[in-house]
Amino acid sequence: MAKDSDTLLIKRYASRRLYNTETSDYVTLDDIAGFIRDGREVQIIDLKSGDDLTRQYLLQIIAEHESRGESVLPIDVLTDLVRSYTTQAQSVVPQFLAASFEMLREGQSKMMENIGQIPNPMAGMPGFEAMQAQQQAFLKAMMQGWGNAGSEAVQDEGEAPAKADKEAELDAIKKQLAELQAKLSGL
Image (cartoon, one colour):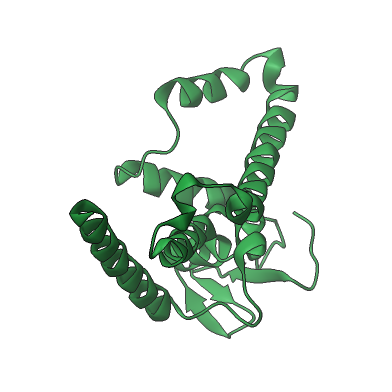
């Protein structure tokens, strides 16, 4: 992982505690996962040896999410990954995975750019603009967890709101969506 000014440097001490050099406090794996979901690049190094431990910790974060039932990787994909470590396919797999995720990010970005441009036969219906704005806000909230491409396409000017603000905003969107669904059912 390249080190640049936007990369958050985390140092691992001999006690295995992780230290955020930006805020001068200790962090957990959940904190690191949150930084990454917010679009930050993270580098984790061993303080004593200087070894880059980023890959090891990212794999640990993935393993913890998978063990909690937050399964993203199907069994056949995990099986194929294990196989790739023992075959000649090992050299192709990293490029394939990188290209696949890049296509996913590009697709999400294009979807967010084009969402307002799709003609809709319901456009003349009363309250349609409000419903469309809520859908865009909902998609914005959902896409923020998919890394830089989704968040770049949907971020407004300024900084992203705090986590509590995001949760309150999402709750408000859910409430408004439920109200619109009730109105549509009444029509």
